[in-house]
Length: 412
Image 1 (cartoon, one colour):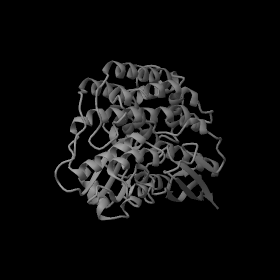
Image 2: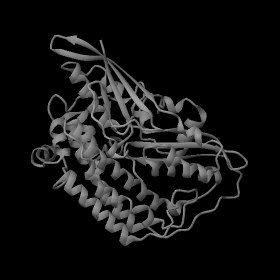
Image 3: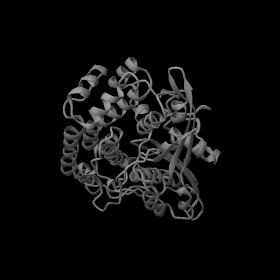
Image 4: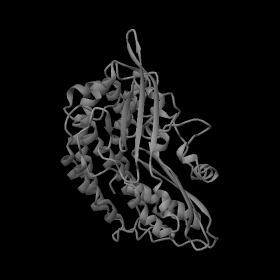
């Protein structure tokens, strides 16, 4: 269920490199950033930023497979957010086959929330220390991942939850609540070490009083020269309808490599989900757009997960697999949330229920588009020198989409 790479793959960074996940991930590729600096009287600015994604379109490997086999393959083909990938493909197959799997959606929400908590947790002990110049602490993930691994078998004893129509859902609520207690305890001890910040003043106090890496990073990002740095002015994606994604992906094969909403780039991820959270609203009013706002959204996203998961566990009900409808197979789209943003898979089935075509758009495609949030946030931003430009770019990447390897180069 992990949304993040095995932390044992950590390696130190070089001066011109910013591998946000610390490894290049199969199926996810990488992102390259080129910066052009311009000297100014009181410092330098990033005159231009060029962002290019190099992600293998592993989705093509699904073509030719039966629907159920494609769902099984999806988490293996994509190295990030395996449960969300499988569920998005399962939902697309269900739409194409006329399957109503509504009875499984509550369990599916718990699966993706647990995966998101794992991903955020990885960032807190591996990525965020790196942004502070400290060694990562992958061993600290052991207890969290042990708890997260309980979720699938406690929902689906046969571990068959990732299939079109769902598996045999028999929730063990006692096991799920015990696992959630362990996850929440991990967050309390490792990330928050006290009450969750509720506004900008709370966040500033927490940054000075808590000894966690998250609090130390908050202190850095609240500094006057960084809090508003990287403002991009890109609108939030907002669109969640599978029908909208289906029309976009089916209508234009190039949409995934250059996605737009209302003819403009868009941002997806924690900020999109948490824009109205009191902490994010307060930080935005105080510091505007930029690094502090993006980090506050990540904290808010992480803080609300245990409470939401507890409500989901209460609402769980047993369910059986759902069979295909009587209509002929066609096309369908499935959407799933991940820690780093919204994921959508579209596919078309042939008469033999095999995938005749498959396309996807991932959070990286939105946030690291050529004219997207990263590129716009970097262009025109002030820096002190080359090294400062690289490190600030690393921070912005970490706040937008830290799971994908990213190399940064400064051009003369």
